[in-house]
Length: 169
Image (cartoon, rainbow, N blue to C red; front, side):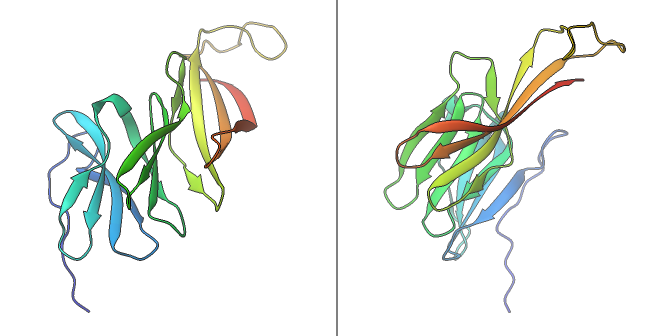
């Protein structure tokens, strides 16, 4: 078995140079997120020769290692501050399929792709308020977080919340 190094870089104190690897169904591509010029990008790397192409732009505002391939197609899904992005590696078309723009929500990590649906995690930082019973929290929180798992139908873009939680940090 021949082993080749496809990535090289120093990274920074928050992110290694490359994170969140995902292998395409045919094994010809690796999708990952990488930091470049102070911005995190979604990148495809050819396994045959290590060449790479950036598939996101600065407007995606990627937050972390949120990236996944469809299990049968060369479709890549990645999350950013403005929502969930879908990239078709065969047509090189990018589309925002779940839009968080203008809201306080951010698409985070933990993207899971099925045949027809993408399930992912989003969160919203909210003002410090009261607990579930309407009382001020006993321990002063440093923040307030509402988190949700959202399911999006790939073709139609129809979305629904499948789980939600409110947490004090």
